[in-house]
View 1 (tube, rainbow over the protein chains, first blue to last red):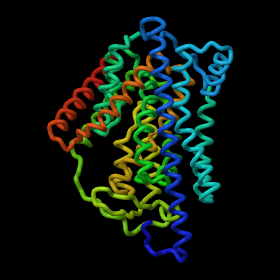
View 2: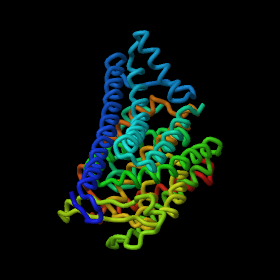
View 3: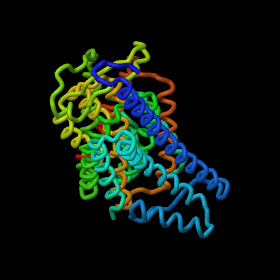
View 4: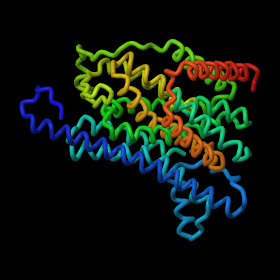
Length: 138
Length: 276
């Protein structure tokens, strides 16, 4: 760890810095995992659609709804056992939209619990609240 | 409904050129989709959804390499997401012609920025102001080329924040990442090192795009039939574009991109004036 020698307790400083580095790794993997899962769901959905109908044409629109209504309607369909290409593609879109959301949530928890940085806990909480509000828009 | 075999290659191309030029996929994708007959508001909605994928994908690597400054990102996100919500709300109530003209204007601006792109070397800020210090906007990153850790401090967060709100408005309004605008703010106003500014802008773009997408989803403008091939194509194109590393330092690529940008800008503005 590179130090600038401005801290009176180098051990404490370097452990805070290594925790910051851990946070980078956590955030990085959330982003990577979310995007990969989303792409995988969409690819499976499209391939399945192709096998089923010989084409990948998807002629459906989503009625205006917020993300949470969208998730609930999809889960409802899944519970009924009607897993179809369309469901997988929709879930791919949901996972994609939730990826930055969970990134912010994880950062907030990290700032709060591990780094105990109140300033940034408040900042990330604000971002989280605005995002949650916008995902409930209707 | 546009067939898959047309939509998918166009999306790959948009993602490829977007990544290669550093401008993001939307700037090519939206004009291309409208030329294929997609209504501009649908094109904007699909584009901003695909921006979540491309920005998160590339941000993941930069964050894990400890180049991205999470604090700078988190602080500025507060402003860009509110801007994106406002921008997307304006698009919903706007008629289509001003959107074409605004998009053409942003393309022209990007063209100009790319033409005048400076090669000034970066110097660390020495006189950090009180607000920026209070915000803890500083950090260090491992520079692989120089083989050493670079320490830096940011400045003028009080100026960067409202400007980032404006960048958020552009992103939400036109469905693009507006990465070029964000990088300019990071570089020129806040004095961040170039690597930190591009990678941190990437991180911010993801949440900003999510805020915009939520507005378009609620308005019923996201159609999965259009979204699925476009997202896949743009992500694949962006992946290829970054892997091949045909950067703009290559003069012929740069000239080609400048030409494409100018043609698209003029074309969008003309369509806006004529009424598409």
